Amino acid sequence: MTNRITIAEAAQHVGETVEIAGWLYNLRKSGKIVFPIVRDGTGLMQGVALKNNLPEDVFENLKHLTQESSLLVRGKLRAEARAPGGYEMDVESVDILQKVSEADPYPITPKDHGVEFLMDHRHLWLRSQRQHAIIRVRHEIIKAVRDYFDNHGFTLVDTPIFTPAACEGTTTLFEVNYFDDEKAYLTQSGQLYNEANAMAFGKVYCFGPTFRAEKSKTRRHLTEFWMVEPEMAFADLEEIKRVAEEFVVYIVGRVLDKRREELKVLERDTTKLEAVQSPFVRMSYDDAVKNLQAHGSEIQWGSDFGGGDETILTQQFDRPMLVDRFPSEIKAFYMAPDPDRPEVALGVDVLAPEGYGEIIGGGQRIHDPELLLRRIEEHKLPKEAFDWYIDLRKYGTVPHGGFGMGIERAVAWICGLEHIRETIAFPRMLYRLRP
Ligand code: 4AD
Ligand code: MG
Image (cartoon, rainbow, N blue to C red; front, top):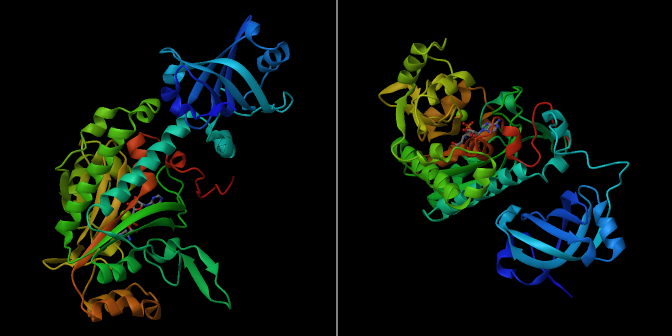
């Protein structure tokens, strides 16, 4: 039996005869030599198969093998600087598990395909190098997110996905039937439960899928996305901003540290990421509106930024921005008003540079029970569904707050992608539920 390794392990097996299990990525032929490139999910390995070294039928079968056919190849490994991955295999034997039919070839070829075609074949597109790079950066970001909170005294307490009430406004709820005519909604955010957890544990985070029936078709919106949300008891807006900034610097640093190769595949300008250091640009909503007006935006005080506004703002700086104190009117019911200026909320958004815009939203929550009740009424939310949430303000209320970061927004920015659709294996969007 030949020792089976993954391509990523090749460096430790130079000079040995090993087996690699994978799929045919590409094949070059030149007379009595063929160069199969095999992929196994961990990397690419170029084989060198000489007609004279192989049984005739094995050589002929290999020579006519089709893209994405599954196979086992065995041979001796050599270091070879010019080969993809830096190693090459002198092929000694090959087992073909399945030859992809010539009549029905693998649909994704090296030629340019339109994005709709690729999205329709997302289940296959994931095999390409670029998609690998993105998904690996995503994995690193998620690990970094968990490490940051785990190393700073936060306890992971996950929150439910079926919820009886809205967290982020009633216009983007997905409704589901929940037995005996009861309605439930897919969660828009774990925040409300996170607040209960923070009152129990002090500092907590939740991390899971969240859902928004976003009717907008933009490069920033998914209907299902992953959000990490820290929540801290005894924290004010300044502390929330401090944590958000430190957290973003840490994540970008980790990707630079561990995923250089992937960033290279993506042709990411890493100097832009290296510039992501403290202190971030700090700006009030008031000043942001003035800045935008001076740059030709139509925005008036009182309205939310459009996607275009965030682009205008964030193209001016090489670091992320912390924009705070938005008008309470345009923010969620739970946002604490600024005691000195109740028309603005103690909320903050982190906007990523290079035109990316919002990656984090958060702030301080209302901790006064009467005010909270008033807001629930003003927002016409069903009070019964919030009884437990109001309890948190009756039994030992404290100033508290936190934020949420959408993983896909962070991946799009860090990878330098034009559109959010490639940041998750199977994106869900307004017009996309398949595959
Ligand atoms: O600003 P949002 O709506 O804030 C909340 O949900 C708070 N409850 C979070 C908290 O304080 N615990 O959403 C937070 C982040 C956004 O900044 C964005 O990164 C991401 O979630 N996000 C989306 N990502 C992809 N597609 C969408 N439709 C998104 N909506 C929000
Ligand atoms: Mg927001």
